[in-house]
Length: 172
Image 1 (cartoon, helix red, strand yellow):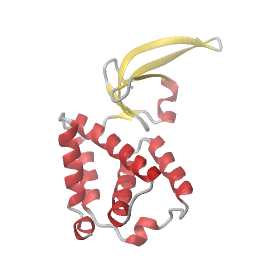
Image 2: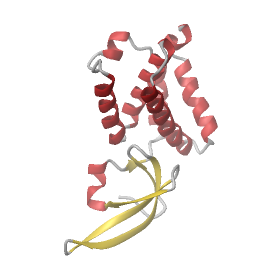
Image 3: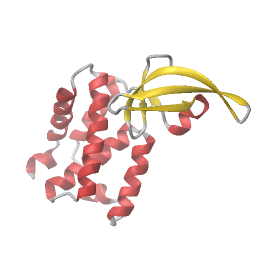
């Protein structure tokens, strides 16, 4: 469970801070809520405590897990691995990507980022792909910066540096 002023990850939106814990009466039944203020957006959400896991609100990743993400980004992938199981149609792929974003799973978000960076190294990305690349990069950078207590610019540099260690990107 989270406490007041804890920083958490709200899936698809990034880092949020628990600003209040309140109770409201819903359908005649008292329900506890976390009021989360999203750090990168001027947005506040109320999340029922009983729905935290369903929504996917989670603790901030550990530095060890972030290092695992960097290691995964540095490992080359085969084209077959990259496209296997992915729909050919962009709309279907995007639907799959959006579901993974909403899950809040940092590893899945990293895989989307890696795939889109690989595609961008080979061809011009569509508008939708560019937007998704920016979105995934932003989510990754925000959490990396928080975990390492650094500025987002240096977190972005670390992220891109990890990806540049991947031989596939340096040879394209």
